[in-house]
Length: 90
Image (cartoon, rainbow, N blue to C red; front, side):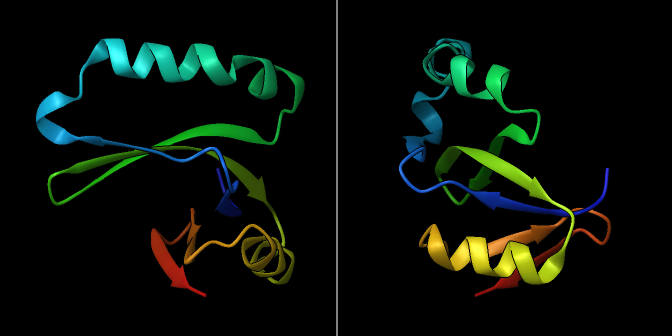
């Protein structure tokens, strides 16, 4: 996969790492399945930072300039360059 992942404002969920398990992930997936099923550009995103798990819906955008604009519109702090594995701070 290539392109840039941009998180969608309002879809974020944070869970303490010690409280995170399959039930929390399943609940998140069920809550947003209708959106992911309706738009092939959407993906479930997850990452760990310190003691917190972050879940979100992310959109894959091919063009860097467009991804940067969408990231700003969605009030994100960064986007992710899939091909290079880089976080791009906004």
